[in-house]
Amino acid sequence: MAIINMKKGEIQAKIVYYGPGRGGKTTNLEYIYNRFRARIKTEMVTIKTHGDRTLFFDFLPIEIGKIKGFNIRIQLYTVPGQVKYDATRKLVLRGVDGIVFVADSLAVRRKENVLSLKNLSDNLAPHKKSLSDLPVVLQYNKRDLAEEGIPLLPKDVLEKDLNHELKAPSFEASALKGPNVVQTMKKIIVMTIDSLQRELA
Amino acid sequence: MKTHHSIEMGGNLNYVFDREQLTAIENILEKDLMDLGVHSVFLIDMAGNIVASKESDHGKHDIYSLAALAAGNFGAVSTMAKLIGEEEFSILFHRGKKESIHFSKVAGDFLIIIIFGKELSLGFLRLKVAEITEKIAAILER
Image (cartoon, rainbow over all chains, first blue to last red; front, side, top):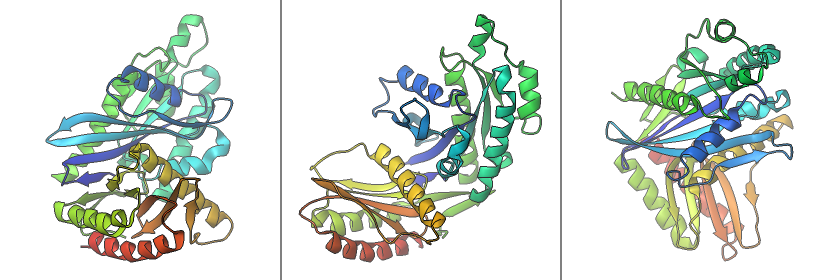
């Protein structure tokens, strides 16, 4: 649910990073926060357990400048990935305008990725939304682990499991090291703003 | 509740506020709340976006984080209400030693969050809130 403020000439939109537990959603936001610290005026909000697992959500508001005369303010959120926090995930999805699905490339997490994507689809339904009518970008995270010899799912397997119907843009990334984190974020922002501006026109 | 300026697109309801609506809302926040001595007030949607806000010099806060947390908090508490068989709770209010925070629903899709000090009584504030939520709902329906 974006807010378009004609008085200030500003658009506020909400992007949620979704995915299975320990997949790298929070790490994505932490990387973005550290990378753009000089430009982000506020602290990143994290509500987490003692074990560093996201409990409620992480939140990072960023101003990305003007697009077509409007000042764009993006609110990035993550959801808690653990299965038991499903009610919380539903809440955080409220008013979502764009989604990044962060998949875990670890071979042992293949099933969790599929279950999490199904869970996302199920949790959008009560908000009268679906994956097919929202901007979505897929991120295949933890690609850096290949260097350590840890078995990863090949991209085509991830594409087949998660993207054969959606046909969304996808990026192989490492939220820890950085590759494609910013590119993922830029892509979802552009897609989200485009979709909002199409309806404003 | 949809406003005159809401645009529905495949289930994604967005809100466009024009200059007139925002000025009218800001005037209400200023005259009916800030003039009473409230420290901060913000009108937000259930997704945590800020529609309008006013702050006194008393304390400038990180209103974007507050808005996100307030929406999350209200959402969590409303869900708990439903889980225990209540439609909703009639009051959501957190009392601090110096500052307190009050939440109120407006027009179905919005929340008004008020931060105030000890000089204002909760009862009096709630009376004012009841008045202004009607006025703001009327503006949103234009």
